[in-house]
Length: 255
Image 1 (cartoon, rainbow, N blue to C red):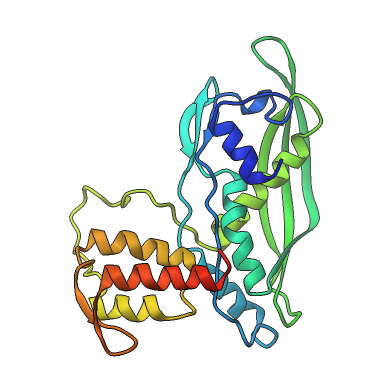
Image 2: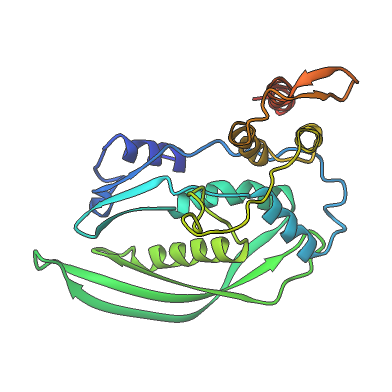
């Protein structure tokens, strides 16, 4: 069962060996099909910091599509499957490797559940190496993770948490949550003009992830019906231009 099938099974409330008792009370929205398109002609030439910045530009946000509602708490979160599902295609697109190269710290503690079942609490600190398409590397990165498990998966889970923390923090990935400053007085930043949206939509380097975000912004800023001059010199509504370009991009990608 792959990541998407596993997430769908959990969302449907299925349990069993593949889900594991630790997944009970946790639900997930199905993972999106994340595809980043557009030719990268200089992937072998750019320094690692440039490639890494391009990955950051591709991954605009990751929503909290996973829910926990059990004795451990009730909250929304971004699980490692969801984060890797969004970031992995961008890393591959720009030729970037993120490898765990060293376990800096590893601590195991034993605890017990309310049913007196033995639990393993694991805390780990991992060193990661980021390698660019030209073979150069960023300075070593570090992240920590903590997990509990009733069998032998505690360490693997903790490393997965450390991976999620690394990706979210190093790539500065926001959620799709409402503005954290809502309720505070502040100046409003004007949104892009219809012409700026047009230029971004028709640009072949604009990722599918960014195009999805643009769809929401067109409705939010109420410019979907604005007329712009398209790439062949004709007037076209932004919403029609968006639908046409996305369809063409998907067709080119064989979707």
